[in-house]
Image (cartoon, rainbow over all chains, first blue to last red; front, side, top):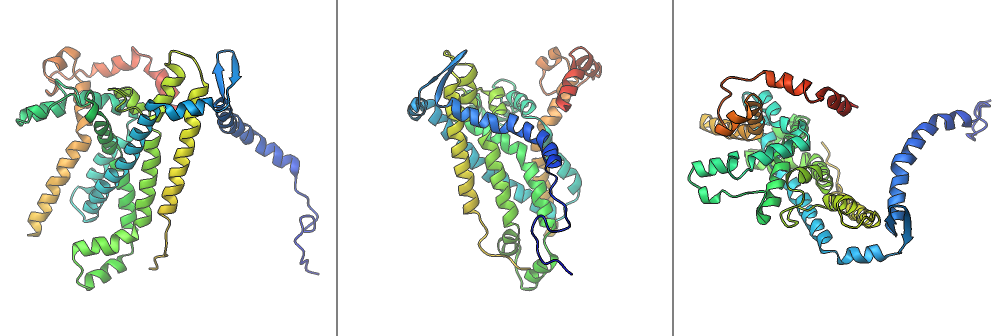
Length: 305
Length: 72
């Protein structure tokens, strides 16, 4: 007689082996709780206290009130959000152009791909030191080249001038990540169905029309994913800024991560509650912006091909 | 006309490649020169290429330990 019930105990007389399940889950759960869940909750707890070397004082929302008045924090937020908004646009646009160039089958495509991808493989520390040398006022290639072609009065200490320091660092991260975005976009372009592009050519579609009306809509999902990924990455940036400028000159390159580090370890008064407040507020801001971006970029219709 | 377009494209791509890989090539050249040589001219080709600097760097600076730490 076929059994039509699907209750947990009726299938074939076996019950869930809870002992084994717990035994297998316990190691991973311990690691997760110990290294992810507990630190997050503890940071939130710390943000409501003044955390001194051997005791804690409950001060309620005083840290948050001080945070709202903290000009350096809001400067850091502005810098970081500016970075996270401009960098993805530059990276994805240049990467798209390069990917289209490689898609159009130029000779040496494989060599170009490798050459453009090498910056991605270097760590931020190495990249920071390298670009410290490149931006050097006296002998860095940038200023030497400017002086050689006669634009000597454009040569300046790029990382030492408050107005050019942040754009210089944004340029460095774009240099790093264009290769990665290009590789992903090239894969997306190669996965497009040939029939749609050939149909567009049959309709006498020029290169521009083909690009805007056929190719771009088809790779829209990849483009938006890359933009969101780049955005999140730039919100967290720390080591590049720390190696090159440490947030100087005059907080022009101060990011939220460097400010948290300074408040926690390089401040005159030792208090771990305030940097916890910064971390908690920043987490909420990043969460809100990512949810906003994902909602903004949600796909509204299904492309059928 | 297609040839002109193609060669312009190739030129643009070569320029971008020198921009993307340039710092890496410059760092490679610097790695084979001593500090005094570098101070004299920052962009010269390594004339006596000091290959022994690599062995020096690995063995005289605990590089093995740092590398193993990074791998872990």
